[in-house]
Image (cartoon, rainbow, N blue to C red; front, side, top):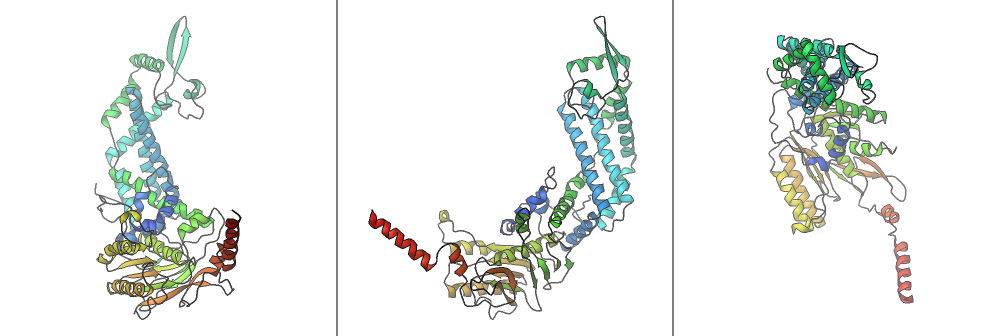
Length: 508
């Protein structure tokens, strides 16, 4: 059958997918790790590495996700996943056992569980109200697949044989130093009668516990000589139906975790009163958000009960870049990260961490965050920054969103402003949008398409940080007084400590 996916409209080239460079800058690794915890049996991480995707693909995913958020559809996919894991577990047992007869019995169980999973999903979707193109196509695909004679034959035969195995019981009686084997049933589960662990729900020696004891093997070989029918049915099925799995169904099991894991993660965050919304489609450079917050910070704080500050922003007519200034530790970098997360999740077709948002589609997400100078590289920090910046500026993506955080921190003030201005003009000329976090108060002045934002402080003498970002110009004053006090670096503190140290030296 033709390729089908709930993630893509056509078969993508996934040969070179690796973790995007912006994952660490935006702390997306922390968020996706939390998402992965919702589906620990699957490798969800790699499903989030493929960025960017086309605008059509993003809309395709967004529509699927809206369907998945309906409780009845979410539940049917959760059941499908559980049944498919049961089929995989049975296949693992089949591969683990050495006894030929039990190996084939486990194969019957694996096929039966697989067919049950597929048929159950097909029935659930055919009676649902799916609106997305992806799930409607999936429903049509499953209707066609499950109507095939080969699939129906496999399902019916596997079900009948598995039931026959479940109904198959023998009674062992010891009479005059000999064992008499008869077919019949006593009360209790087979596993329990043999002293196996409690909770085994199988009533057959073939499927209760992987592996058969030498006594069991001898018993069934003896019984098979007089009653070969059930054993022949098992072996005949294994030869006729070595595998009935479908590549698209196996892919579906993996891909659907992209939606299920994120939805479960979103619901848990909502329980902690963090808001999510489905972003409205917008045209470049029309973009805005209300109640936007750093989702990675929210993940870290939700278990501690700490609040997370939200911010609003909007790019007005003609604006393409925000230059964000203000005091150190005032929330500038957190605001920039929250914008990057907004772009990423909107571009992946998922809900975003905000109360309301309008986001255009971007063809790339480029980030440059300040890093510690590497002594082993033999370069100064400025040269390292320029080395990392060069590939970004050579990118051909004219519709990229660019996030620059504290660039040219070691350059002289005048030089930093000149270089920063050229960087801004370069990306604006290429048609990019973005945000530039800086300590340079004059940066961005006089550049068309640039708006100034500032991390605010309250009206107290200490100028405490509010972590709110507003359309204000940076004040030409320092904001370090509260930080100096926090770390005991005021003039009085330094004078006292130096005096005590000097007196201590004199005593020695």
